[in-house]
Amino acid sequence: MAKIGTDLGLAEKLLKTGKQVAIPTETVYGLAANALDATAVAGIFEIKQRPHFDPLIVHLHNKDQLQRYCKNIPEIFEQLYQAFCPGPITFILPKKDSIPDLVTSGQPTVGVRFPRHPLTRSLLLKLQLPLAAPSANPFGYVSPTTAHHVDEQLGEKVSYILDGGSSAVGLESTIIDLTQPQPKILRLGGLSLEEIEKLIGKVEVTAHSSSNPKAPGMLSAHYSPGRKLLIGDVEKLISENRKAGTAVISFSKQYSTEVENHILSTKGDLTEAASKLFKVLRLLDRDDVKLIIAERFPDEGLGRAINDRLARAAAT
Ligand code: TXA
Ligand code: MG
Image (cartoon, rainbow, N blue to C red):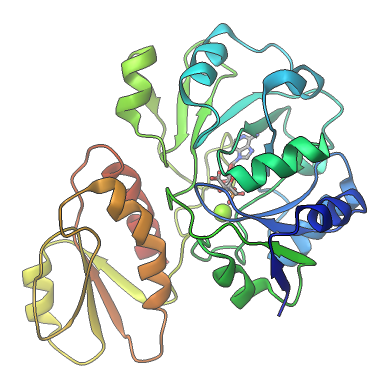
């Protein structure tokens, strides 16, 4: 078990001396290290068992120091920053040499994000350092949304877990590539496509694929809940799998009293559903669960990102 608490001074000291600390964000918990210290960053890859071709996101308190780490920042960044930061959006920008190649897997671009969680904002302000942080889960597994989730899987390996309660959004940040004249969404996430398009107009969403060189880590098989998962017509799938060990994840409807049914939002609110998805996927990673059946969510708002995560969980 790792030490868990809210000691910002301790987290600061550990990070300044090259250690890895789990931090709360509004999206999911991150496994952080000083982004300017390649040895500390190497420790993140080691702890997560993450392949080196999968680049990390760099977290900053605000945009004041952005020029130190990125170049050719387009005007559209300013617009998105003013509207959504701090918040669940990551910007892909051309990087400067100050960011070690290990952070970006040798790519000339870096993902930068300004997280909204108050505890992590205080930490970033105290540190005055950029923090490289992927989600704090073993590679390929569901992301953690509580300090306890981190402790269960990585507790032995991290120096400290900063406990900021449950992540409010519960899905990873939306990633937008600003390195080309036309912005592109590389990962659907905690900020909806509609909100972004309301501000900057139609945006292309590129398909997630392991062969997509712009998003090397976005493998189709990811977010594994450790169980077989089927998505589709729930009634039909239940009738075909009416046996012990079948569990259902639905948006707002109770399908069956015969099987374990997890409803993500009884009032039909996609934001509430998003915040619960990863908790339920983890809950169902139990020996007595043999099959998870999930409903397809409405393809709007955070429903798109929920469908994306479910599809990738089903692909494993
Ligand atoms: O909400 C989040 O984004 C969380 C919290 C902790 O901030 N972080 C997170 O990190 O989800 P991670 O490492 O699990 O996912 C980051 C994704 C990876 O799939 C990676 O491929 C992509 O971001 N990425 C990072 N840098 C990139 C770059 N320069 N170009 C393209 N994709 C990049
Ligand atoms: Mg991740």
